[in-house]
Image (tube, rainbow, N blue to C red; front, side, top):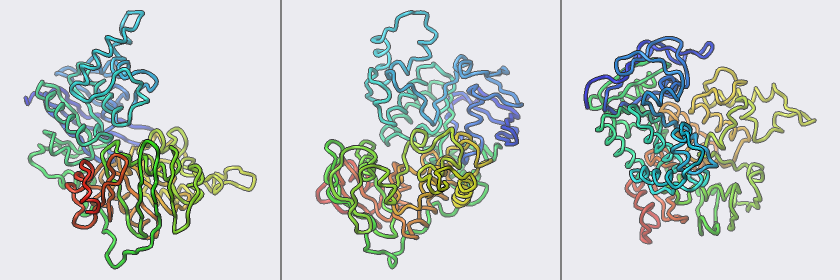
Length: 506
């Protein structure tokens, strides 16, 4: 890595009405380095990246690229300057092919009247040789979220960029895919490409980055060499206080109950999962682990009748349920938090209060079925306070919130129906460490109050830290479970990747 600076940002500020998103930010990026940006949601990370990419214009300050002052007026201008941006939220065209998405910018400037699809697909295959085995001819909407994320990364790699911005790029990737991405990042850095890497995962920052800058409340707090600090130093700088416990205390042995809130018996779907049986005990938080594609989400969606044709028995507090659709699930107090916050978790263009009341409108309506704004606001205010939701006004659209606060709105929507059982799919994806700690505490409090909690997560430290017991899914079947001292990453990964009859219960 060379020490010369390719990007220098000086005294940059940006406000949205009375909200000061950036307050005199100073930042520098060296040629060939991987520079991590850390901070809680709302700290200003995404706003700064949007300024660098030309999506937003600063109110004041200077951007110097290769020693020359520049005004980045649009993402197209940023691309011409050699800046590529892979956003946290996937922004692909779902109804066209992978190859067309990857080379969309190139196609837009082409003067040809005809599209050479075969040439595009051949070029896309060359790009994916270093990423993943994805068919470039398929429509993007047919891909999993993780593969769509890889398409976003492939798209950025074709722009011949000198600066590559990656915003939470591993949020939807498997461990193997993430390790492939890290190897590509290092190779690009060795070639002189500078990478800005935004992540809430400390292990990724400390394993792969050269320097880390911490933002808090729209201000640059500190920049340090990764080798000179530890994860706790970064976390404490992010939140402005010492976080001693990321995970709350687990269920004590004397408080354990044999009473089952949920019983699932021989649940099957013709194609996606088979003979799934398990129980959730009162007071515990149950985790579900497994590689992406193993069937974790499909099992939970099957229980909730969100998709598929499912056979088997589901009992809630000992009573057999006959659920025909998700509305039946909600009526019985069973709710599901989607892993796809943008697509299924919230209505981005609707007000915060309207989102929170959306699952059960009759709670905030009068006898004629009309929404009572006062009741809706009161409900949103109470749940917002419970979840420590940070917003300007409950009338603001959810799109105005940071990713972590959008996640809190999605959770508040579930809590609005006073659920008896909550399935949470990747509940802290894209959420900063402070908000994660709050969400984990809320889940433990709910479990303590008798609400059934089931957590699906790709982050093994989260499952181990927050859950009392973890089921492991492999190829649509439960390959085993771990609890207590046996709840280690090694044991979970063994059950997730190797079907071992002797390890059915670890």
